[in-house]
Length: 359
Image (cartoon, rainbow, N blue to C red; front, side, top):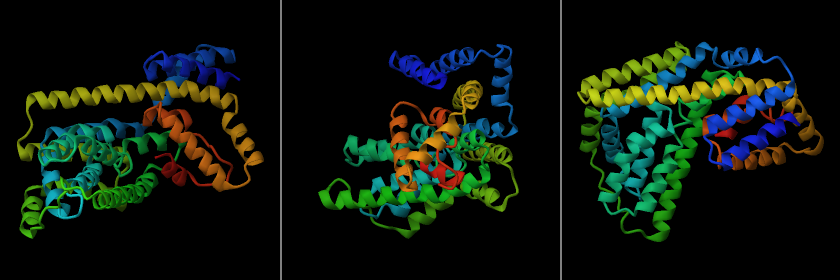
């Protein structure tokens, strides 16, 4: 009953256009007071929500993505992707998707992809006569690859929320990200062929251009190799991997001589802002999880689903529909902190599979 009250209060505040973070905080505090436990527990639960060494990976990966954007990496990635796949039907739309795959291996964030690479992609597509709605749709769709391919900030948040191995989540995210990218490329190919879009003309393939853009973009293109190589080899923890990504992004920016005091300041301010919001949400989630645990919501939900839903496929379908509904109102990190609990009975799927379901 208390959990339902929290949800109702949060939804009501959402409808009143109160920021999500504040809505969650108010709803969590009201739910906590309804439990009747000592108020002194609140600070302890909030500190417990952020008291994790692995959380250091979050600001590091955010800073790495911002430094990549400030360091002139995006233009070189786009130029290389254009020379590599610009000849496929769909032209710059295919380039858009491949560039997002490469950049995802550096930033791990859809917002970083959209802010940096997205501007370059849409500008190039508009210049070549692509309709603005189509260009925007492809760019927004390709940005969703960012949270899947490591180093993914959302995967770090999910792993910490569910006590799941972040390394295994990263490895599982690679396949999921490539599947999403391949699906987008196939859709663009079919759409362009079916509509006979004259504006989506493929560009001629010139191997010399691939070598040229690859050579000048090598420091930027090598970033995913460094990050994924360290991950697959198992020589670093996620936090150490974040530090390596940040140092490498700083090195690349200095090498390209694209840093200015203005864009460095903007990158640091953006990093602090995003990190503060995420840490605040983790602190609030500490209170919310305490209430949910005391009410045994996860256990009761599992028993309810096991009683009335006999087929795992039906259960997974219902969970998918629920996640789509939640995604209409909540951003990724918020949705994960709210619903990343044991949703199905034991044996339906392992946490890594559920992670793929969530994203």
